[in-house]
Length: 186
Image (cartoon, rainbow, N blue to C red):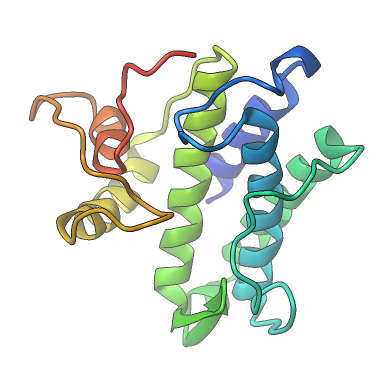
């Protein structure tokens, strides 16, 4: 979680103001809305990791929240908080809740990690930045993404999988299973 959150935070702070209205691989979201979503999911999944149930865990994901005025400072700090919360073994144990859904804490951690990586990639692509994952992060989320993709498209989560070669880089395979074209450009 720490490496993925740091990588996505690094991408966030490099987005320029003139890129905020750019299209993203998330068809309905401009870059500013996607960045705001990442800022919100960082808070929600931190609360889930801490088992701090309330408005942050009992509210569905938002895709229309405005950016905070100081988002370049706040959102990387939120991502660091998310990583710190999941660094505690207790965050991965028992049951928790996020986005009004109760599930095993281990699943919540995998969902949070997947969100951070996939949306980090989305933001990087929309702002013409490089993005990669380390082998440990890829190994952690590949089975999770594969299982979700096997169930078919899920409204608001995964679109229909995009075909890629079996020997494509692991990040390309992960991205393709979420319904995004790995070669997407703005």
